[in-house]
Image 1: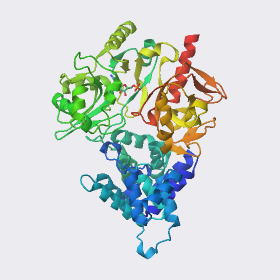
Image 2: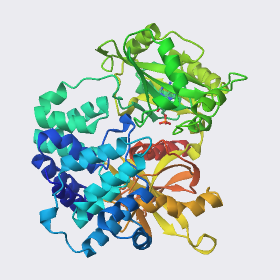
Image 3: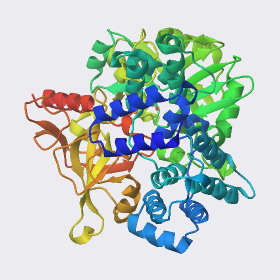
Length: 584
Ligand code: AMP
């Protein structure tokens, strides 16, 4: 398949402002793609070459990409850099330079195929050690020398890990359902396969080659992370018990890092909540899991929490956040920030998929598979239907450094990748108005004035609408930033800049800058009010009105969360309703 075809699709996707149109474009692409390379086409459309858990990402340094462009075109690096200053995007710069160059006679050019582009990018990704930089430059230059201007634009962006077309996984799943099962209504079946494997390329290939039946037969495998189940929230234990049918598992809600551990005789893998491979960063956890698990193969779900090595007390999450993304100094960190892995679920054991078994059974099997040690412990819990008893347990949890409780329905199955009422969190802060924080996505910004000239005055924040897969605005955020953070904002958001609102963003407000939804911030406000200016929950409470967060302030940057992990519109509507109840 010619790379040109994919580039045409990228151009169309960039030009569209409607999500449905984006799906249609992808459906035709998938239908025309040969089945044996459909996985590669899907990864490339997302700007990747592997699923996230492989831990190999494209991210060629700009400096090297500039050198590759110079080598391929014969244009001096200095001139390329000058052009780059003007465009701010090396992809665009590459396209401009190639269009100005006299076209090379096609006799000397080999048209690029998707296969060749993919395998060369793979080589760029894998090159390491001495001479790797030189090799990477040469590989990319080889592609650029044969590229048309538009192809060069996307090659340069992909190689740098900056494609950012804003195509969501859900849009691809929709497109797969339409292309290979005939209707969007089959997305749920395909989505389940995706939630069990986190590998969208594999899912695409399976459905393209074997249709719906093959997707239904999809199995869990060690080494491919399962998407984690997520929790809803409520503010009183009575409401929680009602939802749970009278009784629940009330567990400590540890404030750490969600980690899914996969154990096989050969290897232990650790995955984050977003399916990144954390194995190398937590060798101590790998060792501890190996020691604690008494099964040949198992998949555990749990939370990694830092502990004070001197007192054994639980420490705040921020401490363990430092250990993510560190490739070096791992040994030092292991000593300085020891962690305990609190496990609360068993998803798979020795060939048996437990995700379709009730929680009671999974918890029971878990205590048979894990032998507690000083570094691996079973999450504390009680099973109760007595509100007073649960409240007492809640205070104990908070006193011991947990955030609150996570209540789980005894009969519930493991709903991979889903946020539902089977798990409900109850945190300390839910007890008064909006003292609870929300995680919101940055979708735009307003230019700063006066002291803030040159940076942003406020960011336009949105909640995630899971049903429509869109982002709906809920407030303008301008407080809580340090001067340093404020100054850094324009640079930080540069890669996400766009001329118009992203097709997945629903907005009435007109911002000065628009961004591809990517960055998540934790925000706190005073209360939630009705507002005709924001689209979050539009018409849900009152016709013509959405919901807004009053006096929002930044709590922290949440680089561990993706835009689809943000607080949902549904949650905000519920928070508003609960607030009302309190006033009444
Ligand atoms: P939140 O991030 O506020 O939506 O809360 C859900 C998160 O709480 C999960 O993703 C886990 O990382 C964490 N957590 C802590 N303790 C537990 C527990 N006992 N069961 C499930 N999740 C837990």
